[in-house]
Length: 112
Image (cartoon, rainbow, N blue to C red; front, side):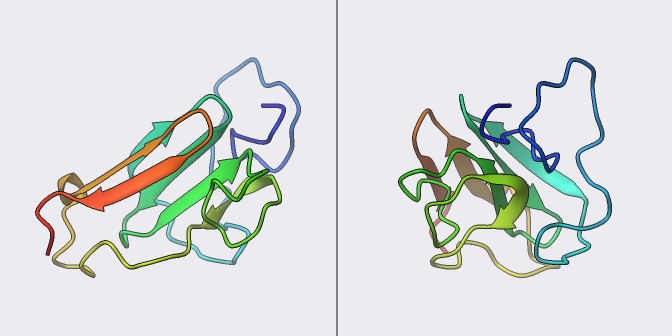
């Protein structure tokens, strides 16, 4: 957790399972239902119930896609092209995303 990749608001080691959400993200978004998650070596990406992708952790090269290059210890919305249909058409299996060692990728399964 040295880069904040657990999304708990700090970069200290955590040795026991800990609840990720405290009913708000950095941007005051209260949609705390996780539909999908991907963990890289130093970052974490989640999709919430609205189909938004949020990330935390290492961001030295802007690899989280949050619009800056600052590491984040809390989940922040990823910026960029919209990749999902808004609810109720959202199906979390339609969006594929992954956090790697130094990158995040996301795509729609069927291209619509």
